Length: 489
Image (cartoon, rainbow, N blue to C red):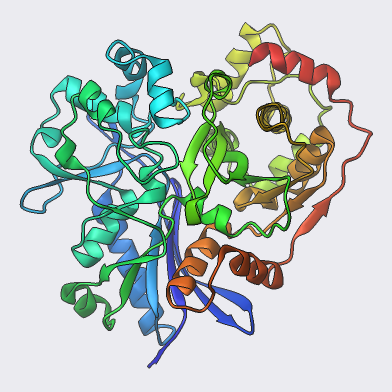
């Protein structure tokens, strides 16, 4: 059986994939090996992730790669969403199912924490955007409630760390995923223990930090037996899915921004150093760890979650498809009703269409009723939010953003891509859509010596995947809507 290709496990909040990447003649070819559903479990009033189910699915992906495709991968790598974590006991056992970041136990945790350490000082220590579900506030909420799973824990592993631990038995905290926690110093692979003390979290929980692109360990004999694999190394790739996605941005030169578009919209720039100031605090920007010492200066925006949740509700009456949703939205005039996508009422309302209608009613706007009207409201609002955020980045850096790269699943939405170009008044380059898996694979390839730098990685991406260019059109009158949007934000 031939041993080639790099196997990426790319987990999102709604699905997971095993994708095999082969590089030949500076060109990367992807093969989807396995895809599975992921969702939160609601148990006794709380939202959790089923870590055992996820591990089982990853093993199935590895087994399929070997048994169905006849390929022993050179290595595996795992990336997931940020902030969520698994607690492990001294015996090496998981103490409880990991909470999901949309769990409501943190609804007041952030404000409660600021009674122990001010918002200004917390930002100065971390440079991270304030979101109620950041790991810091999740742990603080657990400590305040006396959560037993935390009391008996000896280690904290973020989601990709935990899955890597189940594969290899090695416990490490990968840098990019750890940087989403709001518990690290900005731009440094170092924990900020003042935050631990303020939140009542023991220092012992955190493991040694491993930088992306290094070997975590070799998969365990029990996993080898179950999957039919050889001794395959597990590489600590950029464990945060956005960090892996940014690796694959097919950009050249300077003055570009990226939008990693999926359940969340992550909009920002790749910076050589953190940008931490009173201005960035007021604007609520984040400084997360990147590859090769870079900083991902960005803002988390509630992205396709809005329309995904609407579709979930609509499907309860009659199943819809994405094409028809976009088509219906195009029949509705621009900017009749707009929302601030980041208003907390949209974090996990249960019924998203109703939440959007209530918001519009409360802000004295026309209330969208149909699928097309609600979808148009969401798409228009996202484009305006992107404009709002780009203007903030330009004011902080003093640099004009000249083009926007949209990567991830949202890059499929040509209507929103064009609308974004129109509102931002700059070219938009859409693609690749499998950006996270590509970044995961390319960091494995670098660990194997196939490529040597971030520049070489991006050259391979440009050589391998088609992108679509969207030129701004002067026909869309967005100025009045943007003025209205500023009053909502």
